[in-house]
Amino acid sequence: MRVLFVCLGNICRSPAAEAVFRAMAPDVAADSAGTGNWHVGEPPYAPMQRAAEARGYDLAPLRVRQFTGADFASFDLIIAMDADNVANIERLRPAGDETPVRLFTDYAPESGVSEVPDPYYTRDFDGTLTLIEACVRGLGAALNGAR
Ligand code: 4NP
Image 1 (tube, rainbow, N blue to C red):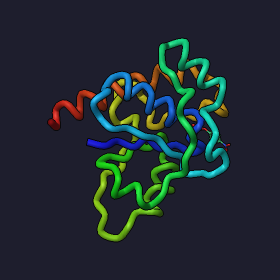
Image 2: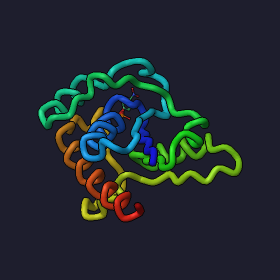
Image 3: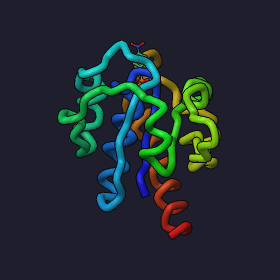
Image 4: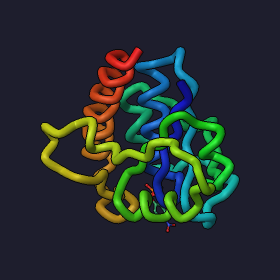
């Protein structure tokens, strides 16, 4: 199983999701990417890194990369942070490819939200991590059930 987490910038939500997921499922291959290219090569956003560090997640080694159509072949499951991400991902899907693309919040229905709000704009980095942890727990349960 190979899981790819995708957001817009790859500096806040998807690198945090990758790190939280790696901590919970160290045996599953995981990566993250952004649909946009503004921050390619940069480390995650410093305020996001600090909020994650406070919960024991190290985002410092991660570097931004842009999502590409080749990712459909490289991953078994693509997880998007919001509906805009899904639309941008689907635009790059190769003909005939059937890799599932899911909203992260689908794994945390108890959260009552249908996307992971972008903390680059909300500035609620800690609340974002709380939601991401809930989504990762649900994803882990789903992957275990599918094993
Ligand atoms: P992310 O947040 O998608 O959670 O990484 C963003 C960070 C930066 C930008 C957009 C979203 N930006 O436009 O620079």
